[in-house]
Length: 381
Image (cartoon, rainbow, N blue to C red):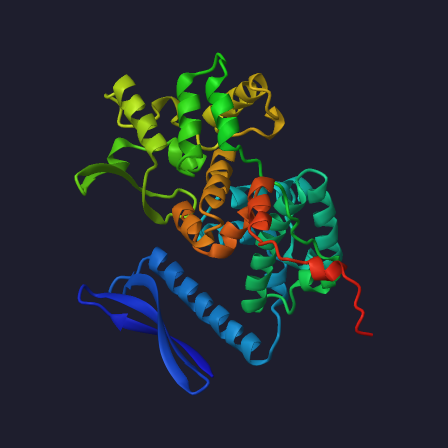
């Protein structure tokens, strides 16, 4: 095994440093993007060469550690909070990533968290801390983010074993089934009939979510160019074409008559804005003041309608759409999954806990048999 620092002469008289590495009978080169003036080296060039030499030494050290199955103790002293932040940012950042980092900082404080200090007991303590402030399933999401980062540290050979794996499976936090609030069509009609002094566009945007399944992040940024109108069999049909903010997946699906009616009403009221619902457009995505105002108004509206206002928030619109579709399509998970933009039908199965009416219809579909013989005494014996 050898790691040598070499120079490649460039046309302008400068030299570019690279590493010539021979390891496990394989040779490769790693270019360092460090250039110096070879003819008239300055003090800065000398410092660059010293830096290149140090990189060579570190690279050689890493290969020695790898060959001998050792764990570099210095790397275990690095701040896990910084590593987790970089790890989550390398994925598709979302609100769960931000929330995980926030909860970790709340638990640890401003001080650094050495990777070596994360043990099985630490994981249990952090889990207990989370359960005091968030729900069981939310805590599990945060722990999975931590677990993913720890698995990456194992892959990078910074630690030998993921400390969360030291927690027996029967003691680990398990996902719990929860009832997702979804309004029936009758309850939606009740809301529509209920007078409540809130911004009318808040109501329209919420109903649009109930009949399209769009999330808050998709509704508040929806623009008219996302709406497509086509003539099919001499009938005008409306479609929506947009990129989901959460998954970044591009979605294209037809709109229901109710959703189209909402769009037409919005266009008639305001045909100048590029946004479909300009009054729910979020400008401060970190603090989300508009979403807070909308959720507060929706709770007020639900209370006026005699519904459970504690369970009312904008995202119940998506749950309502999914549940009503499943009920009206006799549990067609595949179609509903596509309309929700789920990558896996397993995600859609969270809505499989359908209402009593659908269960009743399913049970009533069983035929009646002639069971009179069952009441007759068997006299053959």
